[in-house]
Amino acid sequence: MAQTTLHTRLCDILGIEYPVILAGMGAYAGPTLVAAVSNAGGLGVIGATGVPEDKLAEWIRKTKSLTSKPFGVDLLIPSLPPGFDAKSELEFKLPGEHVDFVNNLMKEFGIPKPRKAVRVELSTKMYKKQFAICLEERVPVFVSGLGNPDWMISDGHAQGMKVIGLVGNVRNARRVAEAGVDVVVATGHEGGGHVGRVGTLALVPQVIDAVRPTPVVAAGGIADGRGLAASLTLGACGVLVGTAFLVSHEAYVDAIETDLLSQWQIDHWKQKILECTEEDTVVTRSYSGKTMRNLRNKWIRAWEQPDAPPTLPMPLQLLLTLDAMEGAREAEIKDVILWPTGQIAGMIKELKSAKQIVHELVDGAVRVLQEVLPTEVIAES
Image 1 (spheres, rainbow, N blue to C red):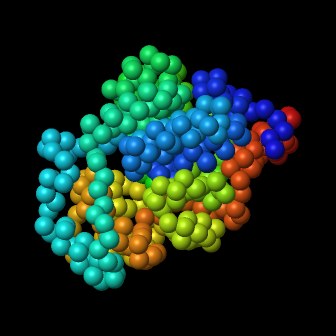
Image 2: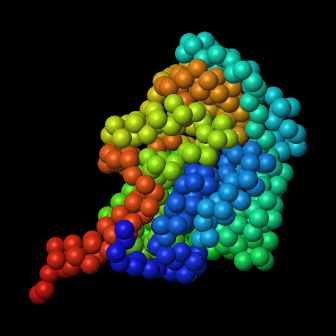
């Protein structure tokens, strides 16, 4: 249990005890994990991307039933290709070369067609409907995991909602800060899931200088108190943590209940994280069309071969691969499915509760700042 209060500007803005935010990992961060992080003093964030519209309201209400503390909802809001938003994805024709390539991979890897068609609505209309649910349910914090949340900030602020924008470079940091977000999260290349091209250590101070006085949170490659302390010394007011919570006891619970994940996926993923090294992940566009850090596998290697077509922009690549991923899930073909994981996984060797992870982050940072640095670094003249 955290013994010392670690209080920053972020705590005042979000109404939380410790400057620790759970990454809103799409469908993986459900109400059980979110409430556990919030109850431990951090900010839990629902990963709403991939969660059906009717389930989003249920997840928000379930979170409220599990905690009275602030929490957030994270959505990806990517820019859509020309013409895509004018029609449904069912009417949008994917390039034949890409369809053939995926069909051939399914044959090569023994991936059956899914028992039922997989359909995900991806449009500006859908994003706005999901945000409307957040407003109706009076969610305290909204997190834009990808894209510019400029169109929602006014309505969110009108009811007291805080808006956070994730970015991977200085240009986008300025853009979301100018739009009026309350907090900017600078996400380094080391992180799991969608990432940019700049490492955390280089990115965070540059973003801080670019958007001051907007507060900045560090993300990417952070899993213990040393990472939190380092982020604070860079000038960040807190951290956003993902991979460390993927092996928490509370992770994925709600994804199983909504059939977004299978138990074998969860068991396999946790074990892979516990076993992997810092070199077992790779950045790929082969799943969503955006750069995404994932555990290495044969699906990614296939898209790296010279005969592979160029990946499509998001969300077309995602639509292209939906049936293959669902077929692989149903058939339990492990070396194909998406496993978003950060490089910091190499130091994660133990299953823990979300509360333990939050408190160890805080206690570890306090120890570094109060004991380690003063005695080992700062010397009297």
